[in-house]
Image 1: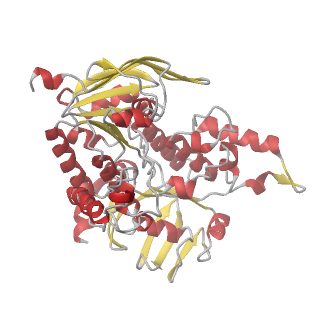
Image 2: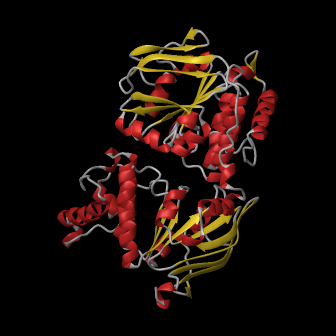
Image 3: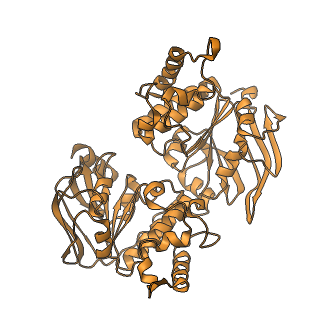
Length: 499
């Protein structure tokens, strides 16, 4: 790289940003060079989103400098950022579901001819170029609302590419993508680097960072920790910069003396899983591993009574759990933390307190009235026990980080007086490494307290480190059962592929 290439295209210097009661960014600096991938890392709440919003013009900094090509600029809106060549791909999708793929990608800049008539053929052919570049096999004419979340994410990326920006900010761009789609995206990123586009890449996935980043900047609690070339880092050092502790502390699994069988599943069959039989003991963490589409989530839904049970039995403490009724499953002592936290786990328009007690509110009712003091006392105990970070119990849960939202959902079931089995699907999806360690500590403590835990996860290190026994799934069936001592990534992958 010559000296001219090293000059930043975008630079933020000494940025400060305060919100009521929160110092979101305290003297943070960062620059993005042409033709590099600059990773921005940090726990939830570290200040990454605030910094991105300042770059994109969604927020104004309280103080500090914003420079393009070394010259100060006044970015007051997203349009200002876009006109200066700064494009953002947010984690939360921003698409019009009733419009076509092509109309979404070129929204606001459709090609028009005489009398402002849209040149549809040109629109579709231009769209096809970006779809081909991303390896996305959909019609430009298809309504976005009919696409899967993963394909919508790729449309969002294509929309950003169509602006031909000088800097692209990618916020968790692979969160909903399959391995093949991630591979396609990384090829596109490499082409963008060759064209001289600067990329700010935000992700919790360490493997991705080490595969694609050139430099890494770390924030912690709104403060700048440091910037390092990727070759100067390893996972241990990066995690230490992010959370102040070592990688060896990530998985706090300890030995638990397991008890009797709590749940036995015999021949469970739905439209998605076939002839599933397994058991889980008191104090045991049982994991379900497998590739995408293996049936892990569908099994969790069947166990909780969401998906229709066609055959089989679920025995809990000697009693058969009625089929197809989440309410009955809860009454018998089963709790579930779903994979899709945002859509199926939290009640976004409700406060933390109501999200915790929504499944156990009957425990606080006497003579037809809610005992508010008792409810608040119990929720406070949960907040303290699980170290849920929230300004108050009346804070909207939507305003909490992903890790704290997950803790709230877990506490919902711990509040239940007769909980026996907790099903947790993708326990740390979309959660930073610091919050992951806290979730693992909570699960380990629950196992020590005698709770039986069923964990579905696509992350092999998580399964291998936290589970006492592991079932591997493929095509809706169990292909192998492995004890913790005999399991390895190679064996899990073998049984997930070969069956």
